[in-house]
Length: 211
Image 1: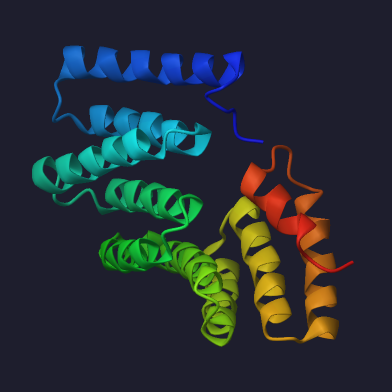
Image 2: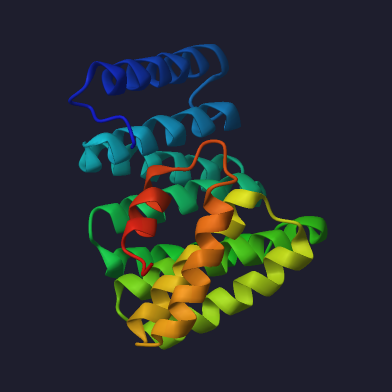
């Protein structure tokens, strides 16, 4: 699971990430892209670890800094918006997550041609997660099938492909298609078992799926 701020491990991880942020901020300046990357990593860890307010504030600051000081760093902006969307989902704010994933889609549409397909698959996977949270299962299924085609064409990493597969199973459960959901869940679990370090969100999601 994600290290909680209530544990020594979680406190230690956040302290280390904060120290990295301070070093970049003092050495390279608040506007440096490396500083914004460190800030979003620190904020994401805070938010997932149990301080959603401060975590979101740090990632929001990173997003604003990238948009202002590095307006063409669309890949880095996309990664920050992806983290912020996940924090919104973690906090149960599906409406905010919807707005954020649209901002993410706009940023991803402006990346280099070589990364466009990969980013499209990543965005549609996250959009599927947001739509499931809104219980818009049919739309989620369409987004996740779109994501599958893009991920296959774009050579995405195993983590994103696994997440897409498990989320598609969840969408099928929501649609009441149990046979298809069971088959998809088995496929997703097979992929999950191949990951060396599966994130907590996928382990939690897997437990909700039919066996």
